[in-house]
Image (tube, rainbow, N blue to C red; front, side, top):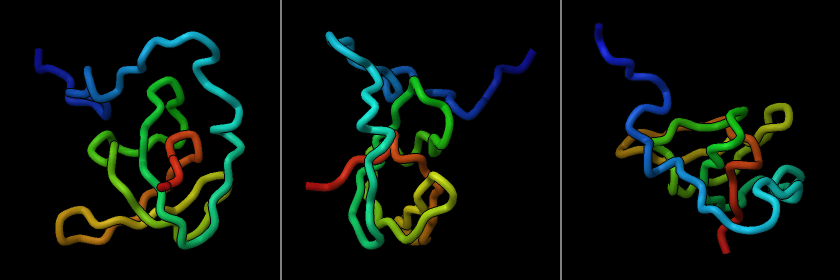
Length: 96
């Protein structure tokens, strides 16, 4: 039988959460808001599957170009190609 090569394959270390005291999913991550033109980091929260981008984009930085429902459209460059991702705010972090 062939092995599965699903959406989260080869992400054993990339999609691990650090154990720490307190809440693992603070509500502030879910209700944070961004404006168009803001630079954001894509940091995937592995405990929330909705609106999660592909793991290849974990750690990348992009620019918010709009909204699509509750999600944000983030434009970034993947190699020489421009891409747009639809990502929920739980997986985004404002660049400081």
